[in-house]
Image (tube, rainbow, N blue to C red; front, side):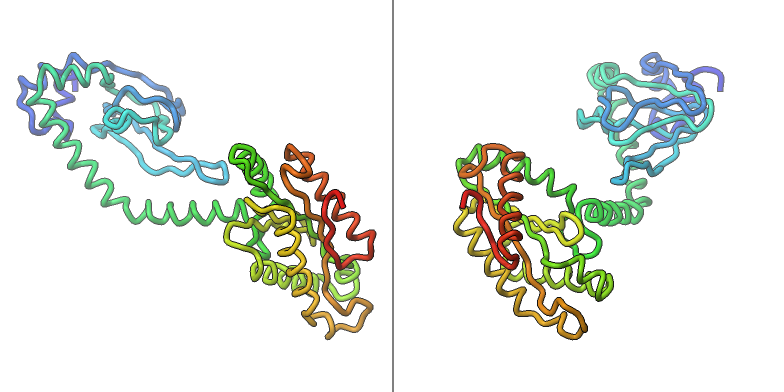
Length: 324
C-alpha cells in the first residue's frame, strides 16, 4: 500500500467511510517506525495517542502480582490499540512493545478531538466500528480475563498469607502495622499489639518431630480464630511466633482476649499422645498499646517484645503487659 489513504481504506475501523472521507482525515495521522523489542509505552504511562499497525507486530502485556508479565494480545497489520487511554483519559492499562520491526500510524489525542469537531459524521462512523470490534475482542478474551482475575487473586493471597496456616504473613503485618498506627493517630483511638511465642516449641520439634510442630501451629491458629474479632489481624511472624493487631482496642481488652486464648490453648491435649517431657501446649504473650506505651511503630514493637520477654522469664504460659 503506497499512501496512508491506500492503507487506511483497508483498515476495518474505516470500513464505513467513503474514499473522500478517508482522504479528509488521512493527514491527521503520523508515521512511527519502531525497532524489534522497542517499548512503545508502559503500563501506567499517560496515554495521549492511539495507534494502527501498518506493518509488523506489536504485543500487549500486563504486570503480574509476582512481578512478571503476561502477554494478553498481539496487534498485526490493520489492528488498532491505545484508544481507551484517550476515551477514558486514563493511564495505559498495559505495556506495548514491538515483536518485530514495525510501522505504525498514530493519531494524537488533540487530532482525535479535532476530527470529532471538524468531521463529526466521520468520527461517529469510526467510533461505531471501534466499539463493535472492541466488544468482540472482549467476548473472545472474556474467559481468559476471568482466569487471569482468579489467578491474580490467588497470587495476591499467596503473597500476603502464611502457606501452612492461612494467617497473614510478616510482609502483610509490616504494612498493616504502619497503616494501623497512622489510623490510630489520626482517629485518636487506641491500638494494641500482641506478640506471642509457643512455649517449648523447639523441644516439641526436636523431640516429637516437625509434623507434631506443625499440628501445634495449626491448633494455635484455630484457637486464636475462635477468640479474635473480625477487626483483629492475626499474622504468623515466623516459626512459632505470632503477632496480633487489635485496632480500636485498649490494653485491658487486648490483655483479656489474649489471656482467653492462652487458657483455651492449654486445655488441648494433642501432645499427650507423644512420649516426652512436653505434655501441654502453652504460650507466652506480651501486650502493648498505642498511644499508652508508644507513639510510633518501632517503640510499640519494642514494648510488646519486652512484655513478651517478661512473660517468658516469669515462667511462661502467661500474658504480660507493657509497663507492668
